[in-house]
Amino acid sequence: MAPTLADAEKLDADDPLASFRDRFVVPDDPGLVAYLDGNSLGRPPKATGERLAALVAHDWGTRLIRSWSEGWMELPFEVGDRLAAAALGAARGQTVVADSTTVCLYKLMRAAVAMRPGRTEIVADRGNFPTDRYVVEAVAAECGLTVRWVSSPPEAGVTLDQVRRVLTEQTAFVTFSHVAYRSAWIADLHGITAAAHDAGALVVWDLCHSAGSVPLDLDTAGVDLAAGCTYKFLNAGPGAPAFLYVSAAVQESFEQPITGWMGNADPFAMTSDYAHATGMRRALSGTPPITGLIGVDEGVRLVAEAGIQRIRAKAVALTELAVALADDLLKGVGLGSPRDPARRGGHVTVTHPDAAVLSEKLIAAGVVVDHRPPDGIRIGLSPLTTSYAELHRAMTVFAEVLTRS
Picture (cartoon, rainbow, N blue to C red):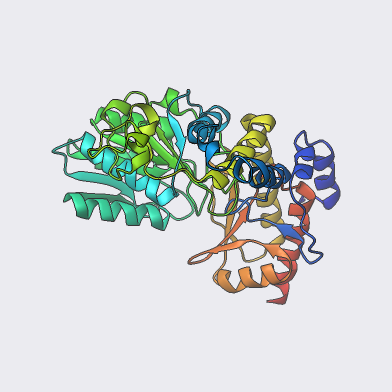
């Protein structure tokens, strides 16, 4: 028998993270039954609005340009270190908040090619998020490399055995998403990283659907390079800057391709020649986006306070509830995510031939989800803001929409 609404309310009553919902802006929208798209755009923390108001009134409004020397210049590194400690399993001095995810991935991939001169191949996932694939193809074209694509079933993801079969002595780097954007499949971070290293290759991980949801241990796994966005489970706001991780082991050989003034050894010397800065400053290009960094900082603070292990535990419980309700209530709907919670990230995808139309009907009925072609409806479960009762009500509406369709 499927869990009842009373069961879900009991889970909420016992939820150690329940109080965090009050730390976020609650929309004045009586027609909203459930927001199940926090894995695309997280809700805004109340503290972010307060911090931005203070920024406008004081740091920007009063101190003006003096704020650059009073803290702004170091903010990308300070927030990066806090993010690394709260969500990435990484020591200080390896993470910086910088550009968009696309730009960060491009920097890392071009740098990886440069660090493996003479190698002619890239290993990548054909089912990865479009940006990742587009950047891979662009880098391959620019550098004259061949892409060896790995393909996997849409309800699953790339496995270690698949990667081992395509690695060669010509592989410059491999790049995958740790959590698949469509199915939520969790890739074997340790195993794939080790296999790439055994072949002499580097690894570039996309952590967009991991950061703030699934515990990571980048340092222990020996990850070389990684990037991820901050507006999903880190709740940093629309278009908030992404982060780059460059392992201390490869920082001295890391030469990023977009050589802007902030990555120079002495930005304010205004020298005619570019010289890479030391440490993570060399990963920067242009002026840091201070308003966006404030959003990242407040989102990271909430994740750090809640604790990534507790966040993961609730994510597992939420996705288990979603799967159980889908199995019982959603007739004619398939599961497009792993059944094993250990292999599943913070969202659940269900499949239906009319997924695009159903997604529109669900949103019109007050259940905000998103459609992932060709047949996926993605149910995003953000542990700091999604309640069990909210999910139960949403799945009940989903069943009603199916009945009427």
